[in-house]
Image (spheres, rainbow, N blue to C red):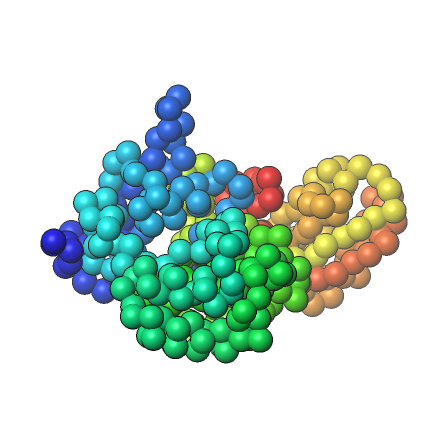
Length: 326
């Protein structure tokens, strides 16, 4: 069987490459619309966007679970449409939902996966034990998976996905629904894999996740890639060095957001998010007193005020005019 390696159209250094990747559902609904990707070996690449942006469909096409309407997709040198069986050998997938086998123990879930990918029983068990040590679940080896917490189950799914040493690891919303402690534990695990050279493509709508983990981030909405850069590079596009979050006692927040950029020196833009006004400004020195004075002059009493660097959510709002979580 040919593996379609060294595809003539794919750049030699790209481990994931797509050209015009498109998925149209009945009713002429374009979930993904002519997306071009070029992902390098060893990087963590994030697809950041709100629910319905096309992130999951994109991963579905790259992992053979969704057949593209048109376009090309090469992963690990394999044409995933022409050779889905071969593609499965070079990828590991952690989906949004828990797909662990509930009739098996923690160890058996890993061992069975190894056998599925052609490992001997001895090799699969040794690999499973090594991974359970690494993800700190070795003491749960003989426990039923139903006894695991959400964070433990997610770590086990990552272990299962990398057991056969795939070239690329795909994670779809990997920390959705996890508590903060479990989320940080998973971030540590992914950071360790990245340090060993594992290529990772993840989708998320958590800006902190993309900012903390990703080498590069593509911001996606309505099936299109709107922007692509490092997290720091994306935040520089805002044209502001500081972001002020303002809570007021009462009043028309939209009206305050409209007026503030005109009365605060250095302010560039403002909008309402989560019951607060966010104000972008070119620099932060002396900014907070100016904001307080401006709010007072406009008849608003400030109850809370904080200043930070611009976030990826700021970038998204600048690009789309809406909140990442919409």
